[in-house]
Length: 369
Ligand code: G6P
Image (cartoon, rainbow, N blue to C red):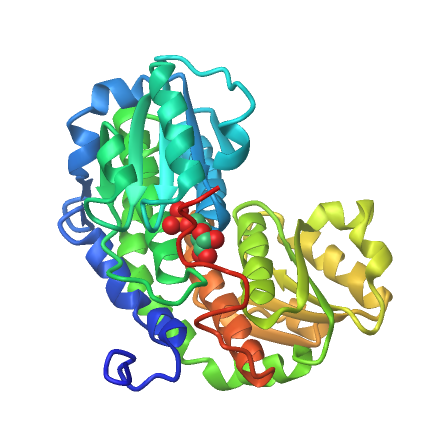
């Protein structure tokens, strides 16, 4: 087991550090920045059907559901197709309105999650086209769907999903870009720009991973707290949800993710000097609004930990701690900011003496209801 961990203390840390490579594997042969193309076997074979879909419904559980939320932002923003994202466990029991004009995308690391599989069966009965975004090759979900793309993240051992999440988001980004190009909803210039930026993400993740010491320092700040709030807007709202989930899963600190502007409708009541607030503030759009959200937290003496774009000097003047991520386009920033949040949860949990790879009460794959 020591060997398999490759010198890391936990599989989770190893898997976090694998992400530059797993994302390269996910993109290998599927994207070419110089020639400006994206090819996804599963999608190309059914491109005309899929790109004519009236609606996409993304289903998943846990972290995979969060990937679906980012997918919603990507597909609607770039490909201009309406998307709904739903927990598979809710979808399966609420008699959903689904027809042959819908494409249902099942997102799953294991490909064996019982709720996701059952939801797919229902969508199939109603005539939807089923697409799988799966890690485990040959898994039940991969076999149940009509088409799909593997994320090629390799085996994920840590119960808390890390590299599978970024693989899912990368794959959904490729799909959104492919569909946007096919449907003519994106300018050639922006399409090319995003393709180039996407291929640069693995190198940029390496830079994020070098911030270990700073993240440990911040983890020491939150390790004895009982609660934490994560805030983000736009593409970073699902990242806030994922950051909060990671923290509660492995460190047992209660954490909630919120869209930053929703803070004033509830969570702001919780903010005092004991509350760390992690703000993912990398959006170029809505930057000023995020700054005012941070001011609202500071006015109530909350501890602000902000994830900011490189070179930012506005937020660093008002936040208690800032961590930088390299510049990228807004739709791609979750792939960088989530890495910091994975590391923050990891170090916090280790400092609290938790068994990071096998958190209490959780299973890697939930194959029963
Ligand atoms: C469990 C795991 C999570 C995972 C979720 C969905 O709760 O602990 O890490 O996100 O199941 O699993 P799936 O294999 O369908 O992605």
